[in-house]
Image 1 (cartoon, rainbow, N blue to C red):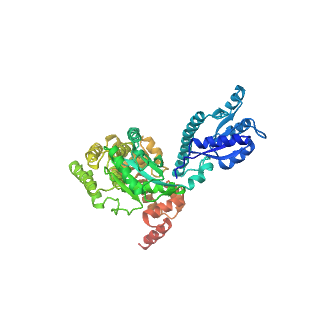
Image 2: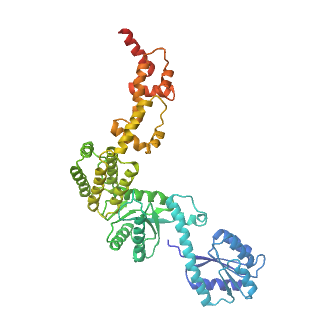
Length: 519
């Protein structure tokens, strides 16, 4: 139910006056409900603690607790309540005292209809705005799954009894990897455009409360609505058509819950709507999805092994024409099949990983390629618009880093020589990478590509080859051999030895000693 009622408490020690004030307030509008009439400040505080009025009209001169003391307590303990002084004492000293307590206004008895109406209508706008703002913050925290706000203590019970219709709106493509300031500015302008059209003044929302929340990415917003006059599906269709008509240059995707959702379910349902959006969105295609719905059956987002082998052959042979044809064909096939964006991005990540394993670029250069590829995919209006740009970007990296740069080749040879000369010493690969001014993971990858095995694997290969010979010398203990070969401890040596030979050092020694004795 849409809540517009403003709760008013009247505090006055004269019976005829208190009835007269209450009657005049309720006569202004049905939006105002006098929830209590009390005769002094102490009685007022008892009701305030239980019923949480929005406005307190109070006289100044009253027994037990006067209006000035009541105004002071309201100012300190209930700053959200608007206090209005109603008194026949219009001298400046009283007015100056109550102004210190942030009293909203000061009216003289008898109340004038015009002055009262003007005051109440002004208060109504502020109170409803305050309430909607408070509700927005509470709902936003609930959607995010964050701890409840202190303001929820006073209105949480009201929200918990209410039910909401939920609509997740996405303008353009999913921004799964691309998060640029330029893109954010673009979508800020898009949302501003939506706010300037009579979007939510349509019949589907005219009698409803509604709230917009940012969600996940800057081009996605969550709309909560309460008291929709039409069925949710009809409202979703109407809303989607309005959005598409307002955003002709961008795809508009709407995901909604078929059923209303209570306050406690907001966080979980928002996550499920986003999950459906992520799994179903097709680049460049406006669509509407209802939750729950049957999921579309898709092949696993994994590159077939035959394509991986073909792709690697094209890279190694520097067949740029074949490479271009293969990538273009793949993207064209995806567009015809209308594969979801998330599925395509998972495949592209495998694609880029193959390039990383077969080309000679650094981690920073890989990150730049990664960023460029996904920025193209996530900002172009259709997959066909993105295809030529993606192919061109990939060819750029393929041509530029097909062969190993001479300075890196020299580094690899120097590192190889160093390892062969010092493998029995304690070698810190991180320190070696710094010595040669390279990132450790990059240096390891390039070394493996050039030499056929990673530096650590080479170190252990050389050590284990020596260990096999040393184990045939019975005067040397396994511990002594592990120390001679630079292993940090005997246990680690035994584990590495078994990885290479499928035997523990002692097992290898016994078996090979018996073989020698037999010979």
